[in-house]
Image 1 (tube, rainbow, N blue to C red):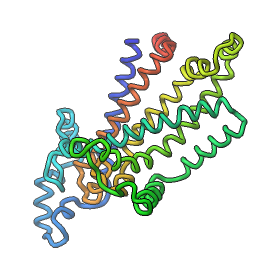
Image 2 (image 1 turned 120 degrees about the horizontal axis):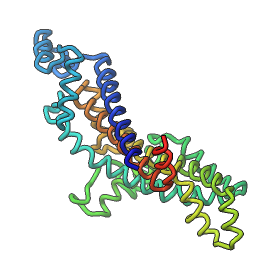
Image 3 (image 1 turned 90 degrees about the horizontal axis):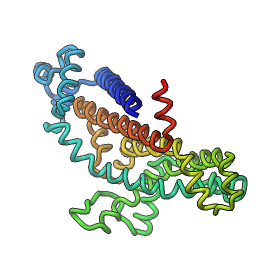
Image 4 (image 1 turned 180 degrees about the vertical axis):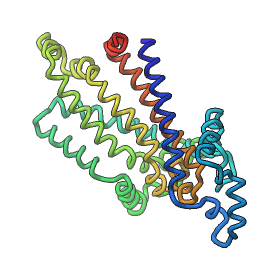
Length: 319
């Protein structure tokens, strides 16, 4: 187990280092002068050059990268060009709404997808299975921004049951008000992910159900619910866990469109505004944090792999 964890930690550190280089390089190779954007079109070239010198934009890229990554390792992601504040503080203040949406959307995804996937596998080839497949295809086919607009028109404009924009925390209001503001964006975020997880659960369960030990459990007279949820689902969880982890990371990083539609002050809206203003430190910080979240989630999933199936640790040790 220790050897397995060490390998995963080493690969995680290497991945994060490579990602930091790619993030820095790609962002700094994009066209646009942040100093010019900050000062506006009326500023003189001398003013633009002076600001660029102050911000360190005239330094060689390798020096800029070393300074940035060195500060990042100490928890300092720099100062925002457009907001004149600490990047890490801005990210922390904007991360709350995004994490809230992602957690609720992830819970809704799991609640919908796992029972539907198991049900479809149990009814393979029947009308119920076809209905679940049709649902998953529909969910995958509808983009989140289109679903957001449809939900706003139906529940916000026509029926006027729910607010169409804004965000309220539980601390600033109450649970009912908080839920009324996030229910539409959560549904918009969760639908596509639920469809994908349903398909994965169905496929994984079908593979497991055909194994001999499941047939033996049936021959012993065990209840079908016990066979499906205690035996089959447990052995089908590795690909399902992978999809769940990727889903949560996708929800965090892919909330920009939904947050823009519903005017939610989250990390997605922050990065959209930062890109339009060529705010290099903010863009780099947000992408690095999201990448770190991806990597940590995958690392945690790797640990769960070994917990669910200890043979993975044994295989890693033998290598």
